[in-house]
Length: 167
Image 1 (cartoon, rainbow, N blue to C red):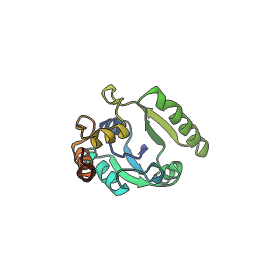
Image 2 (image 1 turned 120 degrees about the vertical axis):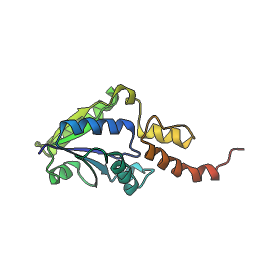
Image 3 (image 1 turned 90 degrees about the vertical axis):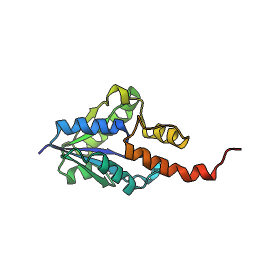
């Protein structure tokens, strides 16, 4: 069975992430969307919230599963008996960092390959950081995230809007 791991913080999951997941699901027998524990990023959503958002988004994909992980990615990949790591590339600027990660992962475990996938061109400008900023400022993020993620974002920002009225 060909198993791939698609790791990320998914804070929040975007349509770009979902596009990569759906296309990876066509290439592999099983795809595990691995939500990373990474406190250094100071995520907006808790690990449980991010995991639930991913689970909800992939329910229609029978060979895709959401999971959470901490520690070294290559160790997680080995535990899941996967052979590939899927990484999304939106722009050339992503490549240098992702290339370094792929080389380091190969150095740590030469049996694991990294597969780079580009989202559809309509999603290349989307990032979780930009989506959070648009949402925080009251903008419409519906073209950029699944509906349930849009609802979760609105809930996160409602208390701050009430406590920070404009003069």
